[in-house]
Image (cartoon, rainbow, N blue to C red):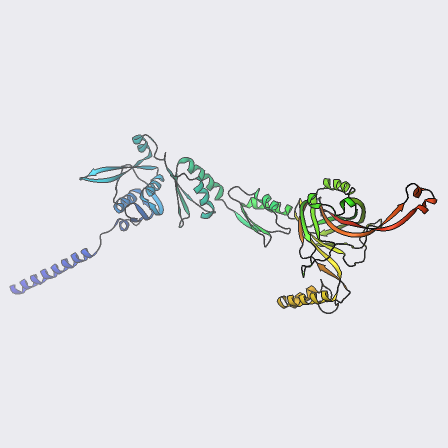
Length: 532
């Protein structure tokens, strides 16, 4: 009986020893609890003592955060007894001292750093104290040199403000941005911080973006008028010249204001009135080469008389056209000056009113027009060879400026070479552009489409110039087209002095003849925008 009892005690002792050994082994395998695990409110990752990869604290006690920083960094952090408070903070990739400044600033706390000998070892000591204690100890405010601001952004993007902040930052200042929380952390002197805070108040405001499709051609004057009304540092525009549109980003009130400005500048519903006057000057011997327009007009442009298809010269006696602009005041002076160049005859006077972006046509007859005496002076001439046509499309650019796109062409009698060349060109282009091109081309060159009309030798055809001219003119000013030099026969009365003036008998001492003289045809186009 006693042997059985002893055996039972021995078995119990062995079991207890095994349990204690197992518990000890498990205790050795389980790592010690870290600061992070002991306090779930603080998550901290530190590299090399001075660099914080991650600090995430939500409503955490300041002492827990400082204790975690001390343990992970190896720094001795001493906290005054009266220090308390809760902190919510999220920081990544930041220096330890910068992190301390940011954390403590939120509670109105400060820190000082010194080196002390502890157990024959030199160690860095960081002491946490109140602002008042710091100033009492050191004689100046903690934030005198560097202060901190934590500013979340709501409406603006990082890229839209960071360059502005960098320009305001002092060399000692720092700008940190947390993409996860969309928060800026600013460290700088008080003056720079105030300037940066002002920028946030101006830029981080609700904005809207609106695209305006323009009906008239976009100009520098129009875009400048829009820029002048943008909110400083907040508003911006983006131009799309292919779509002829402008995208405006600004506060809602400013977008409404700019909308009204664009409506005023965009000339929807307006028409263009062109007062055309064509004169022909029989040039005197002194001015037989014509007027030097380059020396007279503004915005001078030159266009050679070459054909669209072949670049060949369309006519030998007309080498080029001159284009330019002139003000209303200077036009009156020019009209008087031209009287000294030769004898002036009016070819026609007409007025055209066209919708914005619509085309009008003016035909200048090649025949001797100096003898025209039609009082009405309006176009009423049958087309003939070497007549020149100007196809003019007007565009209102802004309330003060109109652009004319001028495409000249010349009428010619078709010879066999011309007929063959035009047909070949149509066929070559149609191979690339399809049958629709032939149908559209037939409206420009008769006979090249469905066969309803055919171009034959002897037909009068229109040949376009190889290029066109775009010229801008102020509203109410005049576009001048000159250098259309042509030879004409002018009737001249010759008489013997004194005797040729005698009544009745004077006819015996007079004779009439035709004299070949140079002349210049000049076109004046006075342009105005008018309401419908």
